[in-house]
Amino acid sequence: MATTQLMIQILVEETLFVPVTSIMGLSAWSTMNLNPARTTVIREIAVEDIGGVLGLSMPGAVNLGMASGALAIVDMVGAKSEAFLMAPSCVPSPPFAGMERIGLSVNAASVTAPAGGKLLVQSLGIGAHVYVDQIS
Amino acid sequence: MSTRSVSSKSTPSSASEIDAIEIRLQGPGATTVGLVDGAGNVLMTRRVVVSGPSEMETNFQMPLSLATTKGKLDAVPMLFHQTSAKQVVTMGGRDPAGAAQERQRALKLNAAAVGRMKAAAETAAAQIAETGRFKPAGS
Image 1 (cartoon, rainbow over the protein chains, first blue to last red):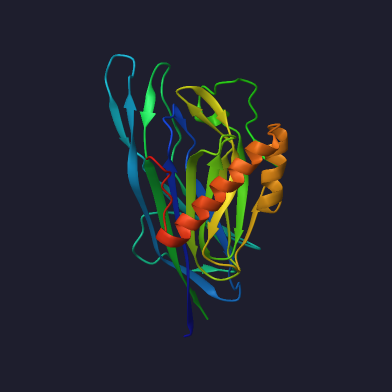
Image 2 (cartoon, rainbow over the protein chains, first blue to last red; image 1 turned 120 degrees about the horizontal axis):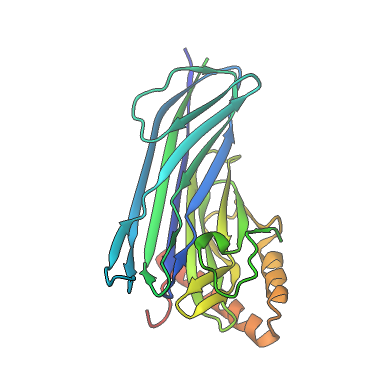
C-alpha cells in the first residue's frame, strides 16, 4: 500500500503601525490538486492564533481585551462528492474516494470599536496546517 | 483592479465597509505586503507564509484603507518582499507594480507622493531582507 504524504501550511501575520478603530478580519485560503485515483485521508488539521485586540476609551469606560481567535476549515471536492472538515483534528479522517482538489482556509473575525472607542493592536497572527495521505 | 465592499462614507463604521484587494500567491514562500500612504508612511503589513507543493495557490485580502481615530486613511498596497523568486504574486489579477500604479492613479497621487511610496517600499524590502521583519523608524 503506497502512501503519498502532502501538506498545506498557512501563516498570516498583520502588524499595524497606526491607531485604528476597525480591523478587517484576517483570512487566507490555499488549494492544491489531489490524485483522484487514490484514497484520501486527512491525517491532521491544526489551527493557532497569536496576539489580540484591546479596546480603549469604550463607552462605559471599560477597556475590553479580546483574543483574535481563528477557525480553520478543510474542504475537498471530487467529481461525485465533496467533504468538509474542521480543525482541530489530530486523528485520521475516514477515507474519501475520488477527491480531486483540497483547500485549507483560515479565518479570524473582524473587529470594530463603538463610536468614540479605539483599538490597540500591534500584531495579530493566525495559522493552520493540514496533513494529507493519499493511499493507492 | 477588483475590490470589494465599496463604501461612499469617508469614515467606515465597520470593518466590512473597508475596501480590499485580493492577492494571489502561486507557489510556496513567505510574502510581505504593506499598506503605504501618500506621505510614505507604512500603515500596516501583512506577511503570509505558505508551505506545500509547488503548484499550490493561496489567496488573501489586503485592505485598501484603514479606519483610524483620525478617519479613513486611503493607501496603496505594495509588495515589499518575497522569499521565493519562483512564487508568482498578483494583486487584483494584475502584477503588483501595475496594481499599485492603478491605485495611485485612483487616489490622484502626484509624482512626489509616488516617489515617497517607492522609497518606503524599498526601505521596507531592505529591512525585511536583512532582519526578516519590518519596523518603521521611530516605532
